[in-house]
Length: 340
Image (tube, rainbow, N blue to C red):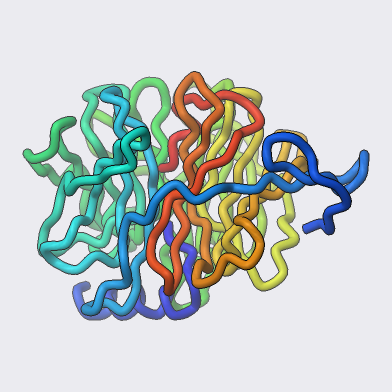
C-alpha cells in the first residue's frame, strides 16, 4: 500500500481506530538515463504524464496506489484516502491522458487492486476494514470476497498477488500503527475463501509479487527496509524462506513492488519519490527518479508496466497531489508487473 509520509501513516491509523489505517550522476545517457560509472546502478528519469488527484479537504491528503492494467487497456488506480463519494478507483486512458471514476463508496480505504485470472473481477484490499472486495470488470456488482479474522487476529490487507489458478496472496500489515512485528503473508483459496498464514512476525509487510516463473513470492517489509523470498510448492505451501535484499533507503522505506519479465524487482519507496530496481540476485540495477527540482511529491508507491511492452507507469503522491509518471522499464511487463 501506501507508504506514506508519516502523516499518511497516522491518518490510516486514525481511520482504522475510528472505523474498526542514489548514486551521483556523471553523464547523460539516451532515454533519460544518467550513468554512475560502469559498475554502479544507473539513474532513470521518470517524466510526468498527468495529475489524477488533488489533496482532499476531508482527509488532508491524497495517496495513489495499486496501478493495474485491465484487458480493456485501461489503467486502474486507487486513491487510498479518497473520502466518501470521491473516486476511490479510477480508470485512466494513458494515451488520451484522461481519467474517470470507476468506483466509489462511503466506506472503503483501498490500498491495492488486481484483476483475477480466475473470474476476471477486480479485487481490492480494504486496509481499514480488513476485507478483500471485488468488482465486475466493467464496475459495479461489489462483493465481499473475504472478511474476518485469520488465525484469531484481524487483518490489515495491503497488497495482493494472484497465482495462475487465481488464489490470492496478501500482505497483511497488522501491527503497523503500533510499530509491532505482527504482520503476515496470507494465502486465500479462490474457491473456499479459507485463509492460511504462510509467514508471520513480519515488520509491516507491504509489496508482494510472484517471481517471473511463479516459483516463489517476493514481499517487502516497510519498517525493516528489506525484501524477502518465499519458495512455494505447487500447492502454494512454503518450502523455504529467507531475507533476500536489504534496501539502503535512508529516510525512505520499502513500499509496494512489482516484477518484470526478466525477474527484476521494482521497489517503491515511501518518503522519497523514487523506485529502486534490483535483479533477482539482489544487484542494484537502477534508481527511478523524478526530474530535478520536482517539489511536493514524497512517495512513489507502485508501478505497472504495460503488458508485453516496456512503458512503466508509477503512482506518485504528496502535498502537490497524486500523479502518474512514466519511464522505460528494463524488461517487458507481465501479470507480476501490474501494481497490486
